[in-house]
Length: 189
Image (cartoon, rainbow, N blue to C red; front, side, top):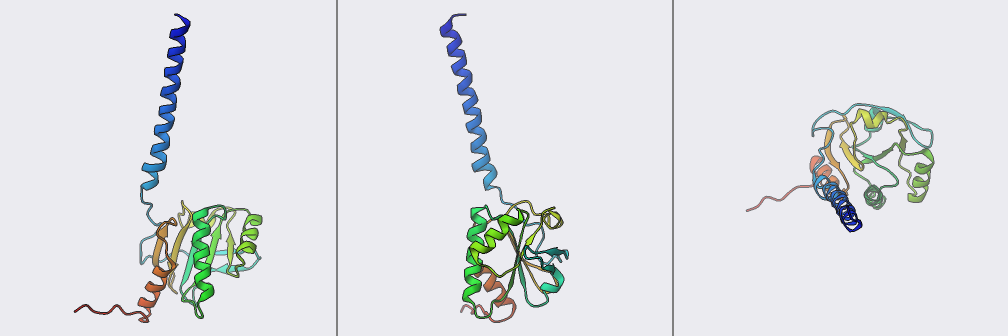
């Protein structure tokens, strides 16, 4: 076989390999990425209770925390841009409210050091639960972050969202106002 033929075959193999890698990336980004992820629980389900330690050493029992008011659980990673944007939106909203309609509990399986840095950076007083063994993530079947779960005072799921796209804290506000009869949709004539 001539050198020219060998080079041609080698070039063709390289092109086929690059096309295969390109096709895999297209599938990964555009096809798999557009599949809608379902929340781990159905609306109305009672979610499991848990007890966990915050990065500040405080022990939180979910069933006790939610007795005060509805609670938004946000499973997140401090390294994820969608998580950071979503939490920033929630924190800004809660800071602006004289009487917020819900409590916030953040849950992550990242390192305690990264979570402390995140808490300092965002200057938040809300509890951040450190879940190093993924016990809460497994109990709640969390596969993607951010995942947001809004619970009523009985741990019943009111609202769930997987991913940051389309998240709006105002959806949660409207839902809670409607639930408490503080928000009424006018009748159409």
